[in-house]
Image (cartoon, rainbow over all chains, first blue to last red):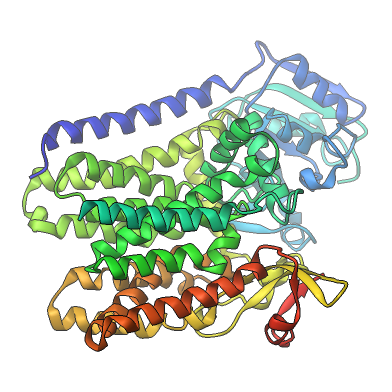
Amino acid sequence: MYANRTAWTAAVLLLFILTVASVTVHGRNNRSFAPGRTTTTVDSPEKAYAVWQGQKVKGRILLLFDAYPHAGGLVSYNGPPRLSPSNLVEFGVLKNVIRKIYLIVPDLQWDSFLNQKGIIPLREVPGMGKGVYLYNLNGIPFMAVTPSSLPRLKEKVLVYVNNRLLTGEEAEQLLRGKGITSDIFITCQQGGHP
Amino acid sequence: MIRRELLLWGIVFLVALALRFYNFSYPSFQWMDEAGHVAAASNYWDNGQFEPDNWEHPPLRHIMLRGFLQLFGDNPAGWRMRNILFGAFSALLTYLLARCCGGDRKAASMAGLLLATDPLHIVLSRFTFEEVYGGTFFLAAIILHLKQNRRSSRLMLSAFFMGCALATKWYYLPCWGVIMLLALREDENYRNPRSTLFIATSYLLIPFSVYLASYYLWFGRGYNPGELFEFILNGYHSLQEYRPQGYDPNLLFLSHTSAWEWFTTPIIVGQGTYLEGNRGEFILYTNNLPVWILTFPAMITLGFLAVKERSLTTARPLLFFCATYGLYLLVSRPAFLYSATPLLPFAFTAIAIALRRVTVRYGDRWYYVALGVILAWNGYLYPLVTARKLPMAPYRYLLDTPDVKIHD
């Protein structure tokens, strides 16, 4: 007969609840949002990072209206990673500004996107018609999704729009339609070719 | 009696420690995966990120390595002392496992010494491979389960160590279930709702808590428990996609990617330098086939004896071996030789108990002959796996076979 098994069962249950609570609170405390709403246009991708930094945001979801970003991982840098026009998203991940990415892929380009070199789908995103998790070296949840399959997100998101892909107004319209709100909405006028 | 047992514990532990500790700081630079493991430990501690190590594996490894780096510094002692100590403890735990599986002191000593002197376990214990300390946690969990004697604290400690093992790698999942079922079966605990609840709660929630806690720094990036579930599923799918052609072609282990080969085919891979005067130095990973090949016959013997004697105690090494080995055989991704490490305590326990049964029948001197031959063979291989400068002639027949993969 195990001694004090009821008391130990309760203690183990409590330990588990406390563990879940502590990691939940720790995660929530490390998510920072901008105090108001900022909509801005930048002329170069890396300037978007200065906007995020200025608003002291971290641990955030990024809605990315752009081409598949640079994602070579730490090994692709000679020394500590430095911000450049081509690595805004990865730099944001490495600095823990971004914790999750929705890469918006136009519906018409979906099939060709999946066949692109370097795109490694891990699995379909449950509940999304056209949405897949993509492999990346950092392991962050990185989803490619079409506008029509983009889910309604409860959490405020960071938005980055490459103007060569679509205009800020078009992106705003999509988000309104999905009931998604954003605290920092950045349009880049000279983003690279999508 | 107890003093004699303690003496044997001491011998097994000290032999294992000495073989792992001797000249451990050579090479003095981070070797093979060490560079990635050390950098990832700091990156996880500072940023909650896994690079440059794989993100799919749980992160207790990083926390432990960071602790050892703090304790010993960013030098060979800091990088390797964790594995040296845990590797030595593994040998002691293998002794205890054999005792829990019906082995007498002679059988247990043989099992412990087989692990203490095994070339693969030694080489992995001298670097940062996670199979060594993960395997030690796993073994500690099993032994505490087997020696719990219905003591709540031991059962919970067993669950805690199982959590530590699972927070290192997923190898141990099947045995986790087996242990829980055995605990429920013991003394018909499953018939008592309060005992059932206690065992199930302990074996499920304590490992879950340890696993979650190991991700605490990852949660510091803003994540929530639901996203950990999402992350783990992605990790599982990513691991299933691993294929030999996706690895760096220079990876030493690529020549043998099937777990079926571990106990049946000679495997020797590694790095070596040919020196002047017909000498060389090598760090080789080998499955030590002359010993390992006894695993299947020993397991079959134990299975036969367990059925004949209707003894679950005798069947334990076979049960734990099959539960763990089955996973390696079923996965579609490559299974490299170092992944065999968690199986070795069960294999050596089975070999030692089976040999002991034979030598009891034919005379004790055969036990000493068998032990002496095995230890002499392992001692002969020791310089070959620990970068000792050695004359090539006595090892030429091993190194010159076409299947041996040595990168200069």
